[in-house]
Image 1 (cartoon, rainbow, N blue to C red):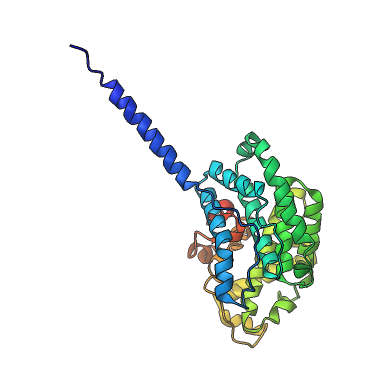
Image 2: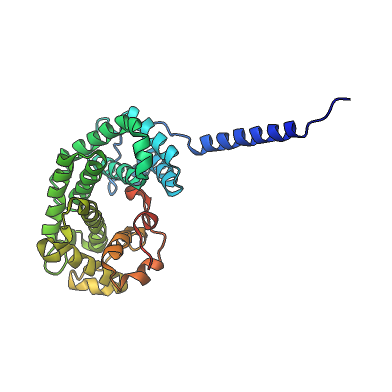
Length: 317
């Protein structure tokens, strides 16, 4: 009578489990079809049309950031490589909002890469041969976008962060220098009272746009520290003045009346995830006002900055 092996069924189970795991991993890293062009109507012009047109790109970014949050770097790299090879987002833009969206997307892509462990990036250097030139094309179109450059407001600062983040990833000093020009414009714009004159003109959204403008200034300041550039010191510590203004308003919204008497309206995310700048700011300066504000909101996530900012930039409170 032949001997029955108990090892063979067990081996078959192991193989089946491995195959199922691989299938689940593949499904988890399903790559959305590349978005050729990002050209939505303006955010304030057509809210429904805007939400519809940005959804495919935002869905991709959500998958990318989720992969980063899970430290699934193989998936994150596959997502970026696929869209890079398709030259995604680089189609013609007929309006203006698409330039902002592409700038924010490029910033996010670079921030995800900066979260990747150095050894992983080094081991997959050849795959970045498709990704790096694509990111540089996104940065160059942002640098040259008159739809952004003529504004001289928070969107210029965000463009500066896009250039610095991508320049840092690709080791392109000229992009970093172009980004610094835009970030330094923002730092010069900060008045003695911490206010930004152009954002004050936003009326009942002035406070929101002060908060939104602060994000790229802080993250740019953090990224260029590795080049021994201290943007926090420039214009008499202007970033700190703007940070103080926003912190005061978070603690007491009525304090913003010293800037404008207009009653302020906030988006639901203004005093939530858009306070993500507090994570690196607290990590550097240990401002005693921030632990209570941060703890109540953690984890802070921002789709333009690679996902979970708390995990990537936060410090123990």
